[in-house]
Image 1 (cartoon, rainbow, N blue to C red):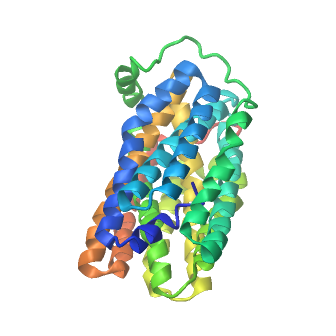
Image 2 (image 1 turned 90 degrees about the vertical axis):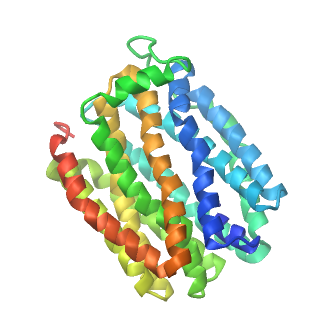
Length: 370
């Protein structure tokens, strides 16, 4: 998905969409994944991660075909939404595997290692996509998704099976009933609120950073490199996440990460050349590199093993809700006051959320012996 993320807003703009249309399209594309996240999580618990991962590969291939073959804003929106569904399915399935193969002491470290590999793909994707888009156009870049995801289907069979849960509890039929059980677990509401806050800022960047970079004159190749800097910094910080959680605790790290995201968004409209913008993008990557695996580990710790898939799906609901709301709200801000104002408003919102995150994380303590 990292191949297409920087270029979907640019493609919509090339098809004649305004910033309002871009915000609505990106937000609408997040709606379907949000509505299906709980069911995807329940399906992981019921059918297992290998089945769900294979289904995700199929969805990705279908989405890539639509993105290449249907040249309209509704077509791009539908394809991006399907990619979101495939992404959620693959993410929830693989996160459940990591949770199941970890004990409480090693879980944060293992989620950090898991996130390194996912971020490595997010480094390569924008670079490859930017190079191809620069030379052969957006459709050629989108076709790379097909090339990447076709072998993912047989590769999914190579994943180790998740150890059996203590009892077969969750199914598609009971997903919403058990979602309430997960929500009532201590710490879960706080984790979901934190996810929503930080993903709002991240989605602002994903939706409109490429538009700003194009406005200041960067080519598609340089735009891809700027996005890759975000992912590269995620890779850099995640191996040390376990020791840092042990040393500082979840609370301090999440507060610092939220503040970093605020700074990254706030300085962006003040910058107009490649390397400073790469540094700002990298700062957001450091923030994401901390928040994503930390909240994964916290979610797994908060619920019993029989609810891991469902809990990861519910976590995705919070993140996808943010990805729906954020581009629509900031698209309106851009239409009224310009793209620079949107980044400044986003920075102010995250800065104001820092004390909220601080209060929410006081109940969390690092795992012993991480």
